[in-house]
Image (cartoon, rainbow, N blue to C red; front, top):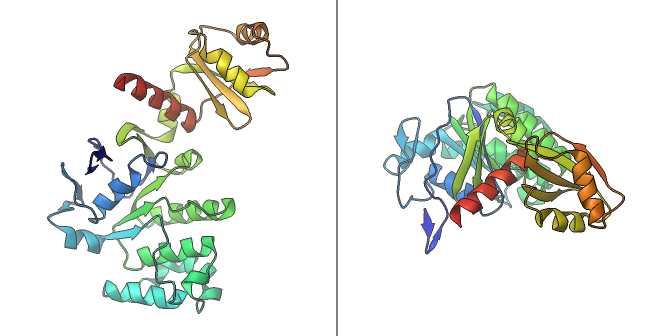
Amino acid sequence: MSYGQTRALKGATFAVDEGELFGLIGPDGAGKTTLIRILASLLVPSGGIATMCGADVVKDYQAIRQMVGYMPGRFSLYQDLTVRENLEFFASVFGTTVEQNYRLIEDIYKMLEPFANRPAGKLSGGMKQKLALSCALIHKPKVLLLDEPTTGVDAVSRKEFWTMLRKLKNEGITMLVSTPYMDEAAQCDRIALIQNGDILQIESPKQIVDSYAYDLFGIESKRPNAVIKALRADSRFQSSFLFGHEVHLSVERGSISIGAVEQFLLENGITSIAIKQISPTIEDCFMSLMEHQNATHI
């Protein structure tokens, strides 16, 4: 899929199992939104084939729109309509009623009920998120497409949202969720790590972490930028990145000890450091795959 000279997607190939909670994990500009809009039949792909439940997203777009619930990244409900009016409107569009499928949204709507008569535009970010999810579910879709649903909401609302998705999974709804937050990857059954329109790896979160091919050290220092600069100047070290207050250093397995790393940094005038071996996260794996992608394209 291209926008002018810019290729947003470069041959993304994957399949989502029925009833699976599948995550598209990657930063802004990776191609997540383009991919979800194609699957929602809102964009016509410039090449390739995409199907859902046997229906082609281009040829069978009317059938796709009946079977899909779509929650875009930007709140797009009617701001002047109340919570209840938005729900009733979207139910009527799909030829159903709020009462008919209330059981599916009951847990979510109970949190919205005190605000049933409030205009949607005056809800908090977390409540807007819950209303948008309710409207996407009200016709009982087979597939739920969620484009960065937790972006811009507080940590508590993010946690609540993923709890709701796990409950929906138990209803047998297939879900495809995109997010730039690497820590949310663990909530999914499988994930696709995506960057620059390429899918770098598809596995369960555990399998991706288990496939990490290096020893990983966490280095605490008052001069993290100096630590990174020194490490990147020595070919013995695979990669080094700042993760919060720590520098994460990857090296070939068994190639160098913690003591040797400490001595190297001391020789470069960096003192007051603490080094320990750590387990990789999804973000470590993503950074490693992205480095390999960049090296391949050079």
